[in-house]
Length: 215
Ligand code: AMP
Image (cartoon, rainbow, N blue to C red; front, side, top):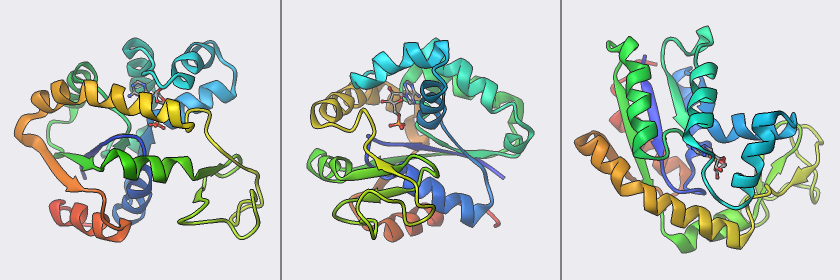
């Protein structure tokens, strides 16, 4: 199989594309944002430290996130490759990802960069709602649930992420931009740029066209 890395600002559709790729390629996905939110929900020591960074739109320190990631991908289901949503987020994490992957040199690595304007990101993120129970994502304007604040899938309660307020989204975006160039320099010609302003189905087709993968 392969390692598929999804890079892009918050709200660029990495999570949405990851879900489609899981189905299409039968590959598991890993999201460091989800791992961190789980730690916060468990009120673990890591979660308590991470929460203060997350709620201000800052990155969680590399040592914490790299350990969480390394630990998580030890699960056997990840040994044949996976889709990584939200890791790496800077050059240091990219380097450590490569060294983690060096044990699997035979598998191809695809690095996708989803490009979206800030105005579009704000519109997408500020309407976003997540089911507390099954994590399904809705959008008040683009993909509303049938009943207000209730998940169509499981009847769970829909909430807004603590880091989805406008000032925090703007901060997350500026942190993203600050870290982007060093990370792109690190990856060089390995980066495949995707216009993620397009409809999700079109983005998906474009991603698939770059993957020389058997289903
Ligand atoms: P996400 O769901 O990917 O938008 O991540 C939500 C938040 O979790 C981010 O704003 C960061 O505070 C933290 N986070 C997730 N992944 C990383 C990472 N690779 N490095 C540092 N912080 C991260």
